[in-house]
Length: 54
Image (cartoon, rainbow, N blue to C red; front, side, top):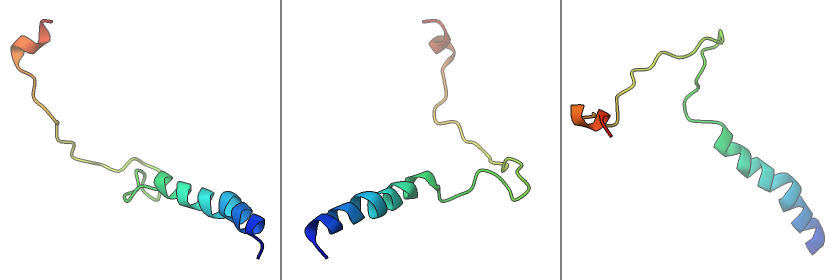
């Protein structure tokens, strides 16, 4: 293969495939029926009562 062919292959095939990996999270957000997955969300911080009055 010529150098320009390798560059085009990387740009048009391998780079988009590598970028697509970020769009597929490790866990799916929907079930197979299309309903949202139930999750137990833990709050990251707790606000003190005096924090509400800026």
